[in-house]
Image (cartoon, rainbow, N blue to C red; front, top):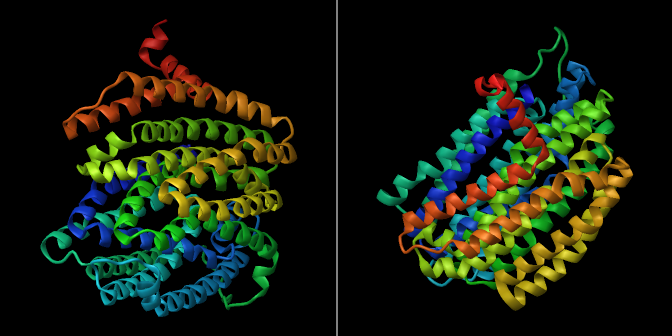
Length: 505
């Protein structure tokens, strides 16, 4: 029941945050302009690149919190470990923020291709970004504690409140006060400070109380037992950052800042597909760690397979809808035909790539639960060795579209050729069931229905009608995916039998 509540809370929060993005991003583009909006995308990339400094700490915080709740360590050991990790987080946040702050003028004058904004204004905006990025990354430590403790209802509510402050409350100021980059990122800095303060307060209220006479001081010793796992995570996390941000980094140098704004718009829409899977991963990863610690392998695999089907339905339906109806969706959303036409090919490719990645991430959850990430490390190393040079090549020749082709292609190769090795190592006999029972019926059905809808349904000259039409198509594709999922069909049959109509039969 707690797992179900966590998943539901996560989805409600993620749906709200996604809705806020859907509504707000075109308004930012309207009031700030393409070039300033490009800085919003640059800010998002900097936040992600800051993850290179993580050295595996955030996943370790979450995993050790889950292990503590499973009874695998004492209150005192847990508090000492958190104190050691907290000080490291604080040091890295300070050093990383200072380095980024110091590089602001260089980034403004030598890296970004500015046409209308002044270098001074862009440099000041990057300085504000630097402080915000450090604060928000520090917040990740406290989020890890809450997530690992399976207090996801609390965390989801908090995330929704912060999203409202960051994305919604800034709009009246952009309209009536100032729409300059410095003002926008100054507002984001204020929210980041509020966010960190609130998370510190929440976490320290939920930490276990120490026995009288015991104190906590920073020591290296509590980190030694988790060091191997943390360093493995560090490498894979760094690779993940490089995998997901190389294209954005390269294109921020190649494209004009205004063009980068259109590219950012498409990528941000496509990223919502990954958001559909994140509430499930956030809920099942601590539970899988707990099941593994208890030796309950059967329930762990059952949870793994059921969650795979759920993500395949949700992320698959969203990816196919966004890919097959990219241009009408973007036009209905932004009201700008030029932006929609320019961003649609990028959205289609990234949407499909993110749909594949949402499902391909599951073997990582299995390795995470077992505390053995060697295969994940090898796979990600090969992945990044292929992805980075091909992304640079594709971006240089075809811009955002070239990067999109590479992103989709490399994810498909990984999904088809690498994942079976992982399954066969950790759970022999699972692979064929996972591909052909859990995934293939859902993916094939969603693709066929999406293609049929694309051929049958026309477009409208009215933005509202067009948006309603695309939304309705998305729900039809989603319903088809639900019908193809054995887990969802079983749940629906059980629900029907429990209702009045089902009992009458």
